[in-house]
Length: 280
Image (tube, rainbow, N blue to C red; front, side):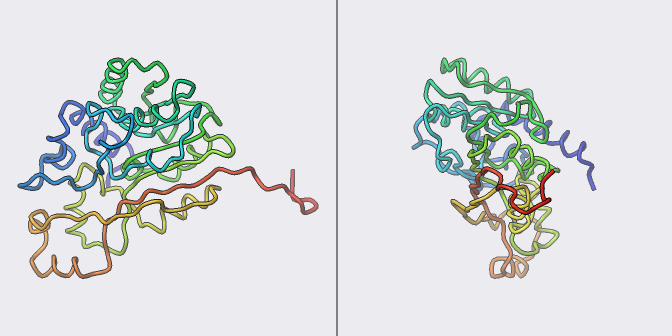
């Protein structure tokens, strides 16, 4: 079992390498791990190209959804993007907030921060900034964000409960988040879990869907909804490296699976304390 530090060091090393590759290389080599399919599979990510503000230089093909499409961002908002990578979601969000708003991208990897800043400079944006930091302890003050977005990042983080608490801290009262992430349903075979872990950690840190949703609720968020859900299909040429034909058939026909979900929830005003003696 790897320690939290070992996991974080692995993520930082892996995504430092990815920052130097193009989108096609990342997609064809399982998010940069160089492990997988003989064909070009875009297994996790969705197509951003139809969204206003999209910039192809910032799209490394590493996401598993389109959280900014569902995030209800308005002009003048302050938006925080967790695991901002080369800036893809930040630049889409910037189109929504306009000149009067602000976008802050936070990423753990210095090479990604450098790439995102270079992309922002090329676009001439002065209201998009990128900060290096751990999303378990965000380098921003409390109550500053109207919206938090993130795309396929929490599954890489050992302390998911800590990140959700941080999201609550940085959001304004009345603010909300829209996050795309990978979750599991059912008990995957051990050999399949090992195969899935090769997708750049995209699944290695994923937890059960119900546990994921309960973490959000238990940290005080309200009006939680799943805005989008899709199954992640692992190609047979990957599965055959780890499972027999019979095991592949059992998995295809079973009730377990890997899913991308986009979750929305709100930070609302705390309810008034009415009962005598209940408040300090």
